Structures are given as C-alpha cells and as structure tokens.
Length: 276
Image 1 (cartoon, rainbow, N blue to C red):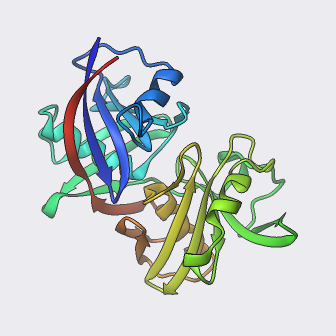
Image 2 (image 1 turned 120 degrees about the horizontal axis):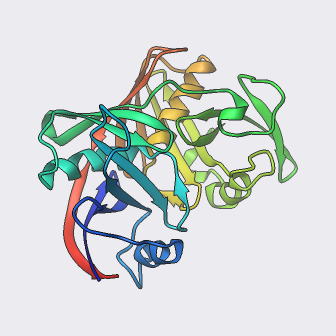
C-alpha cells in the first residue's frame, strides 16, 4: 500500500503529515519508527495524522506520534503545520479551525505572512496534570543531578514539561541531563525538558530535550511552558519572544487562569508517496 504524505516543519521541528481522511492507514509503532528514521525512512521528529473529528463542533481530529512510535497529547509546532496542511490540501478554507487532540480541543487561526496563531489553553501547574510525583503544587521544585541540586518549574501544556533556568544556554548540559531528566522517577510518563536563559523581560533563549525525540530545533509547547514558568517566577512580562535554535516564536500569556497564545510559522518542504 502506498501512503501520500507531506514533509513540513515549524522552525526546524520537522513532521511527516498524513491525511487519514482520504486514505486508509494501519500504522503500528514499528512502522512509525521506520517512517521517522532519517536514513531508512522519510525522517521526522513527529508524525501527524489528520482524522475525522469524534465530536460535534470540531473540524478535525489531530494525532501526534513521536519518532519512537509513542503517541503523545500535544505539539505546538505540529499544530501550526496541521493548520497549513489542511488548507493546502483543500480540506478546509476556514480562517480558524477547531481541532480535537488527545489533551482536549484547540483552535488554530491563520494569520498574514503564513503565520499561524494557536490558543494553547490554560497552563496547568497541578502535579497530577503532568503527572509528577509531588504532594502539593509549588512554584518550583528541587531534585539532585550529578551531585547538584537543581531548581525547576513544572507545567502541563497538554503534555508535561520541566523547565530549568540556565546562565549560558550554549553550554547547557542538554545532551547529558536531557535523557536523565526525561526518564526521572518523578515523572512516571516521562517529561519534556526545557533549558531557559532569560535575556530580558520580553525575551528568552531556549533549548528543549523532547520526550521520545531527543533535542529538537524548536518545541512549541516547550516555548509556552518556559514562558508560563518564567512568568510565574516573576522573570517575564506578558509578551515574550522565545528564541530557539530553529527560529523565534511569539508567546503571550496574561497570567493565571488565562489561555496562553503562540504565533509562529509553518512550512511545507515537499510532498511524496512511500510504500507502506
């Protein structure tokens, strides 16, 4: 069986996007790993599926699979690519689309200059939402890594995030600490790990070690999580530019109880067909 796909990226965070409305698919975790392989498949950080919605008032269902074959709840860069994909493929001509994800319903808005604005929902700091093994919700937590006590913030943006403050992002131990923190016993379903360096009240630099995908060039939910934690720590203002290795995202969060907004690009690289 042949599968039609599009290769897309959001600031270098790359995706294989597949229309599961107009073609029948049976993708096992093993097959997803093969498609995501950069030598023997197409290559991607995540695979995205466009499916029919399961509830009224929703335009599409959006499913996300990491390169390791595991399904996850949310992906901010993927959401923007999803919006571009359904428009380019003639599946929707709406300026705003309502999309069902494993973590809830989100709304995507097409903006000028091929940007997409996403209502990412209200950040959830409750430990049970990640989940994280902590008795009570705190602005910050501590754990020990390589003999050092690390202070971190934790928040769910539909998927779990741990955020660390670093002084020099270029020399942050992302490759060393990322996989250890991702699988730390505090997080029974693993966690995405953000390394954040503020450069002012309206800008941060960020690197993210993503759960199931290792370090990526950009992580949309990671950018949202870093701003939410930074705002909670009193370090950031409402409007923040997040500089990632792949480019910049604009994040706006008015504060507790309010939805967080993300604006950024989504780019189609090529379309193709692969034998399933």
